Image (cartoon, rainbow, N blue to C red):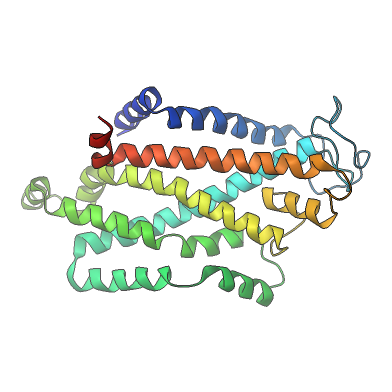
Length: 286
């Protein structure tokens, strides 16, 4: 399985410029996020640096109106946002895989019930629900928010996995495995998982984009913990203190640049992997 993943990654890197570009952008962002572990400042502390100073050698991204070094603040914000996106994606992938595999393999009434459950979650208006939950609960930390988003982020992907399992169930190797006495779990993890993994990888990236977009939107509206630096909360404080009006352009510029680079790289990575695992797209590309 690991050999197949490495071979696929090598093929994508050689043939797809979008995949290569996304890695060249995403890897420096990840490295920059790792810098937060070496920060000399507490991310929640304020006024340890001169306020509203433009970028310089001592402060590469400048300082904000709260006396914080934006270089280290952006490092913390990027790390927290990436961890948040991964938490939502991984938790929702677990739910999507369990629901999708059971629905596709069991079929009949079990399939109908789980598909109805998927459709019910798809039509739920998640944004008003999140706002209502924030009004009910005074404190909602990032981990709690990640768990809530994970509960809404699985239905579409569960249907994709279900469709794949429905196709795999009708193939000859499934029938052979069943008549040879292979258990259901062995069949799923030894035979089906290799076919499901590309879908999981692609939907993980897409789910990260979705969750990061929601986190930034909620943070800009002041509906997340504002003392925890994320890409959204850094933007929130810049807007609240009228950075553009005050001429503190670097306070809003660097968060916007990082958000654009992060979303662009993740989107191109998602598109390249999706096209690679889609046989029809590979045929058209030849």
